Image (cartoon, rainbow, N blue to C red):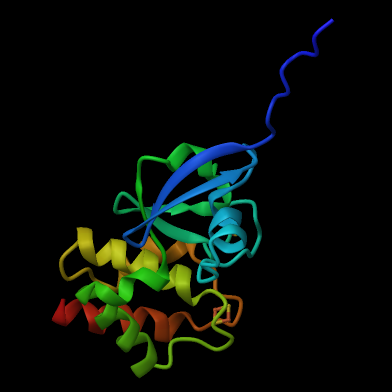
Length: 162
Ligand code: FES
Ligand code: FES
């Protein structure tokens, strides 16, 4: 009797991250966050809650914010993924990063990559948002250090030159 064909536990995926194409084999259950951090070494997106509550893992998928801890890597094979490491080449991203530094908008920095990615999406989609609009939009990004006033100020100032 011939043995049944062995099923592979792994999926072959092609991911485009920060403009680079990657071919990799991953378990189907792996989140985009884990694949970015473990398989590809992009550790900018952080694992905070791992359950969609803190925003630390926020990345852009086809230009829109996405919680990478709740996204299966296998579901974004044909998408363009951007992490905080990739936005240095984006003029708006660079302005935002500089504004965060100028306003000292962080303490431990754990939430900062997610904050910057969410702010970039906001400024890509809304010209000159008010302080209240910024606060409302950024509500999904938790900062346990309480750096909110400076984060809001950094985004507001960046919006004036973007
Ligand atoms: S780690 Fe994804 S939302 Fe907290
Ligand atoms: S700067 Fe520490 S969690 Fe935001």
